[in-house]
View 1 (spheres, helix red, strand yellow):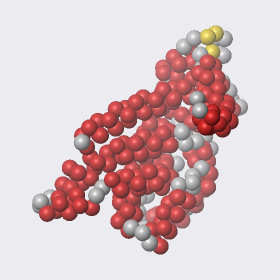
View 2 (view 1 turned 45 degrees about the vertical axis):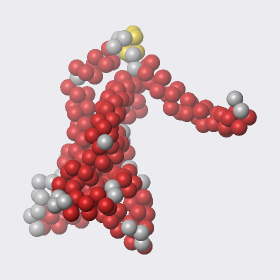
View 3 (view 1 turned 90 degrees about the vertical axis):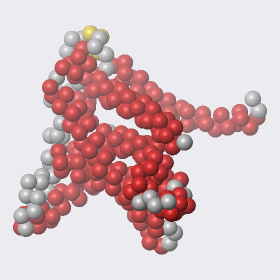
View 4 (view 1 turned 180 degrees about the horizontal axis):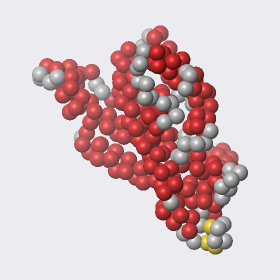
Length: 280
């Protein structure tokens, strides 16, 4: 090993220590303690069995997947259109302003976002009163599944734009011009050239948005004060709740979430490889 490599490894040592202390060690602790049942006072699969056979926990998993999936789909579609529009603007003051605004709003989540939506679409929000006055979307409720999907989609859009924007550089302007000269419509160009080339970026962005939504806690807790049954709220209630305190059950639920994300990541890698083969 050369002196330069040894110095580089030495500089990386503090980062490795922090990574092990704040990533690996807590994950190992959660994995080990998830197999201990406080109710039975024994080690085993009791926690996982209770979760997989409980209607209450099954509902939390279903609600989490439902909200995360649809908010990721809607966020990806809007981000695709927004990223394409930004890319078409090219350089300029407006482009720089919109990119800065997108970067800023990508951090607008949690309690501030929940408070903003309460003001706009709460029971007596500004837009709610206007819609009630003009009899528009009277069945919409912010604290329902549809309302939460709207909230989640909002903080998915800026992140999706930032992730997808660089992918448009892979599309060469000559391809669209050549397709037009050969008689292909804009739809056929995107169907056979644009989307296949961008497929890896689209799949990767979707997986990141899905993970972002599955792990979101502050926004939904601030909106519903923990009364909506999703996985992050259930984990928090089991770890720090006053009524149903059971950290080991919370660890088991967290490990199921890890397994779920691992499966999604494996499927993502498989789809990306297929997309690259198709693009070639």
